[in-house]
Image (cartoon, rainbow over all chains, first blue to last red):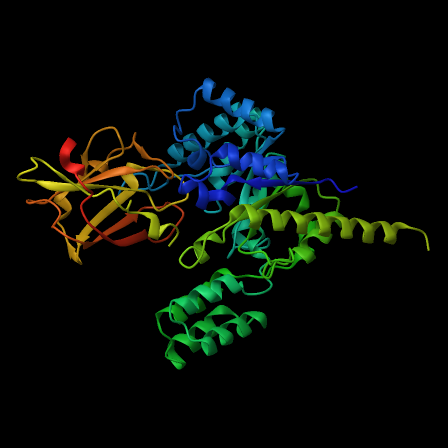
Length: 338
Length: 137
C-alpha cells in the first residue's frame, strides 16, 4: 500500500474565492468530498487578518477542519524582501520574517512550510535552529524554470546535508515535469491573435525539447512574430521537462508536493504534466507525503469561459487514484516471485 | 495577468462631494493578485477615463482604515489589501464622473518580491454613474 496521501491547496480555488463564490469552508468541504483530506493553506490568501492571527482565529480553523474530517498539510510562506521602496530587507529582517511564519505555522499545527524558491539558502541556514525547535520542515519550492538539479536548488541541499538537518529540504512543484505544451496556454494565445501555424511551430519545438532561446529568436525575428506569438514563445523559458527518474534521488529531501496543473481532460488525464511518469517513481521509491493539488488554469481561460475549479480538481484526483493504483499493482507484480 | 478583468467593480462608480457640485468620484476595486499585500508594495494605481490618465496626486486609496494618497501608501507597512477584498479608489475630479457611459481604466503596479520586474494588472470597463449612488455621499 502506497504511503502517498492526496490533498488540495486552497490556491486551487482562487478564482471562485476571489469572486466571493466560494468560502474556504466550501473549498475544504469539496476537497474532503474527493477523499483529499490534506489542506494546504496560504495564510496571506486565506487569513484576511494576516499576520495578526489570534488564538480565537486558530481555534476557528481547527474546528472547521475537524468538522470536515480534514487536516492541514502545508503552510505557504511569502517573504517581502521588497517591502520598502528602493532597498531590500536586511538579512536580520528576512530571518525575522521567516521566524514569524515558522511560529504561526507551528501554532496552526502544520509540519511543512513551502518556502519561496527565491529565498537565499544562507538565510534559510540561519532559520534552521528555529525550524528544528518548532518542528517545521522548510521545503524550498522547486518551481519551473528551476528544476531538481538546478544549481540554486543544490545549494539548499548542500546546506541541509552539511547541517545534517531534517528540517530543511525542498518541495517540488510538478510544473517542472511539463512533458507537453499545455493546450490551454496555446488556445489563449490564439484568442489574443497568435496565428495557428506559429503556435503549432512553438508546440512542436517544445515537443522536441528544443532549448527555448532558439524558438524565441525564430518566432520573434525570423518569422516576424506578433505580440501574442512572441509572448507564447517566451513561455518556453518556464516550461521545463525535468527527468522524473531523478525524483527518487531527492525523495529524502521532500515531504510534500505541489501538484501543479493547468487543465485536465474530460477523461481525467493531464495533457501537459507527466503525472503518468512521476507517480510510478514516487510509488517505487516508497515516498511518503502529500500530493497537493495546485490548479492554476483559471488565468488561462477566464477571458473566454467560466472557470470550474472544483471539476478540474476532481478530475485530477480521479487521475491520482488511478495512477497510484496502477503503480502499486505494477510494483506488486515485480515483487512476486516468477 | 491573473484577475485583470475583475479589478473594477462594475456598478460601483459614484460621485463624491456635494451632489450639485461633485468634487470627484469613487469606485470599488480588488487587488489583482492571489494573496493579500502590504500597502507599501502597491506602487501605482493609475486611473484613466476614456484613455486619459488622471494625475497620481488625485488618487486616494481606502481599504477601510481611512484614505491614503499613493505617496502615503508607500510607507503604510502595517496595512494590507486582503485577497479578494474590495477597496475604495477615490479620485479628485471636479464635476465628478462624466455623464453617460465612459471607459474607466485601473492599472495596478505591484512590487512583488520574488519577481524580477513589477507586476502590472489592468482592467478597463465601460461604466456609468450608479443610479442615485451619490445620495448618501
